Image (tube, rainbow, N blue to C red):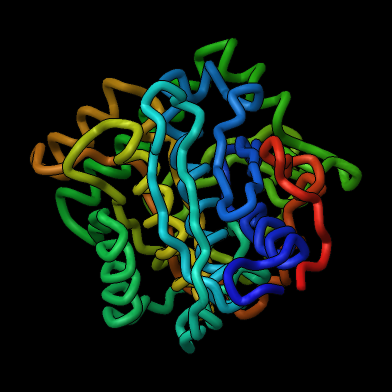
Length: 339
């Protein structure tokens, strides 16, 4: 490792951690290009979901999460990142350019990077224990630092509107043959898969957790513990939003989602991103009007809570080999150890 830039082995390790970011249907729609003094995040449109995500919003949110994971990993390894988002308007797939600089890791850097390895998307019901307000406040603050609003929707009329929107979107999508075919193609994966939603992480039957309808993934095998009772589920719903609705906002929403989810994991909270209600344009507009009073644009819903004490550990979702998502800019030396 040089004093001016991380060597390629350090970058490979950081990119491997970036690849642990959550993505819609675990499509992992990103590529990384390594240059002599920079790393570039590229959207991989070959992994898009045209029926589920016709605008590419979920794809860019997923890439934003990978961008934050990469910055988090580099920070823990001793490198801060100067980030240029959407640096080339002529190339909409070029989402970010990072320039690493020497940095002394903080305790927060190390804690968030450590959370990458044990964060899971937990689609099971949560316990009846309430989430402490201080935990939510920390998630909200870290999302705000990345330019997004994270708004708890806890009880009353707004919670009812949000829960109804989630259910309506699920019914709308289930009636669309293109959506159901696309969902089936990306879910119920076996243990040898390196992408998609594994059968062991998807619920075996359709479920409501309290008032919240979960996405129905086909061919799931995940069984709730006998002690789990959806009626007593105290999961919190938080809407992630930004003032604007453009690719830059979607990318920042993904970064903020990553920060919030890693914070939750560091606090030992279970979490599950919910995008379904915002994948249907008319219903997304209702959420914006009825829940956010047209003051911000919603991009994602985060569900957080305490896992049941009897709930077993979830398996790690598969990820593509790091060599499949890395390439080098022309003229970049492929050195494994820089001196």
